[in-house]
Amino acid sequence: MPTAIFASFEAGIIYAIMALGVYLSFRILDFPDLTVDGSFVTGAAVAATMMVSGVHPLISTVTAMVVGFVAGCFTGVLHTFGKINALLSGILMMIALYSINLRIMGKSNVPLLNEETLFSQVEGISMFASIDRALNNFWLAIGLGEPVPRTWMVLFFMIVVTFLIKVALDYFLKTEVGLALRATGDNQRMIRSFSANTNVFIILGLGLSNALVALSGALIAQYSGFADVGMGIGMIIIGLASVIIGEAIFGTKTIVRTTLAVIGGAIIYRLVVTIALRVDFLETGDMKFITAAIVILALILPRIMGSYKEKKRKATRQAEWNRTNGVTSDGKGEHHAAVKSNS
Picture (cartoon, rainbow, N blue to C red):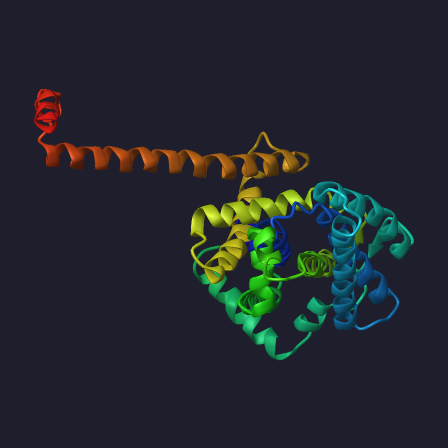
């Protein structure tokens, strides 16, 4: 069980990059972009195909990110210049990307088990071997038992990469272009009154969003050891679940806090799924149902909690008003207060 939780934490930090992309489109731009299910696979397909062809893993990963950016821009163009509904433009691009991904890979699955990846290169650094041994000894010393994690370097590497992306995104959203992007999502009519071209910001935002999604897909392919044409199914739900869970638990007072919440939400989501699959009556095939249930709970529970807190605040205000106006709890002083006010 501890090893499974470690693996889910490891995968969660990679999926967090995809969740940041979903946050950019759904929360910042207020755009329901379903391109995610296709661009995630596009990133994996481009990276895997290039690595199998002998291209350096870093170049392959960056190229996958660029192709994801282009896919997102096409969705933006369909919506802005083609005047196609936001939801429909994402669906159309997602469908188109299925065939494009098959063309890129040449088949439905590209294995990477014998190929050099970013993670294999990180693991191959000799100085990290001693760190792995020390951490595994600590793992055993605190009683977590066998098996120990194969390597800790993938986790540390992805924590650094994910937080660098988070910091870059935080900085970007505070720049002039980033503020215009946020304003476009909040109120397009208002930002147009300042002679800003909202079409450009929508295209740019969707491009950046899908670039992050494609990067996550490329990294997941290298982490899993394969790229598959069906690996992106339901990815938008996973991204939304990560965003909603993170916002509900950690809050959204500032951009820095919100992006951190999205990362935390992605990790918590993977942990919840891992623990849920350990329940006897649930199987691996139930994962989509578990995902839907998590999203439903993440959407409903904050509303219930918010309603409860609001009722509590109203009751507190009413009690203070009663004390101020001399109204007793049994209602005997209510008539007296009314008479006094009429006189």
